[in-house]
Length: 94
Image (cartoon, rainbow, N blue to C red; front, side, top):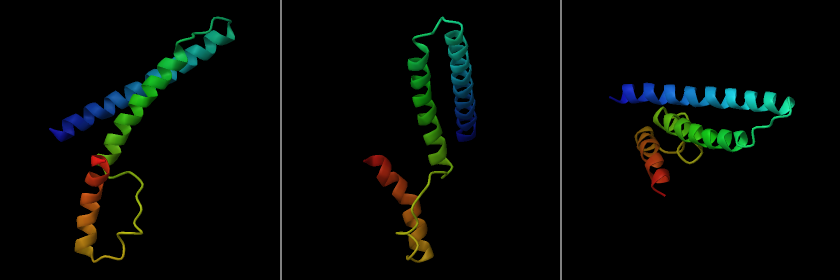
């Protein structure tokens, strides 16, 4: 099931990015011709926020977030592995 949900997450993220791109292009074109879409900036920002949420969950699942190894490196391998698994849970609980 997680693989299926990851595919849905990827498709939704790609669709959001495509909608944002098309929306900004149409808004710029309409502004050039003198008919600005006033709501386009607000909608693009809202969609971008949702895209960031979806991208953050995907990066968290794939351990793609930037991390600081400075505190974990001095420990033995077993302890460092334990900390790497548990630290994301601590940061998401706060």
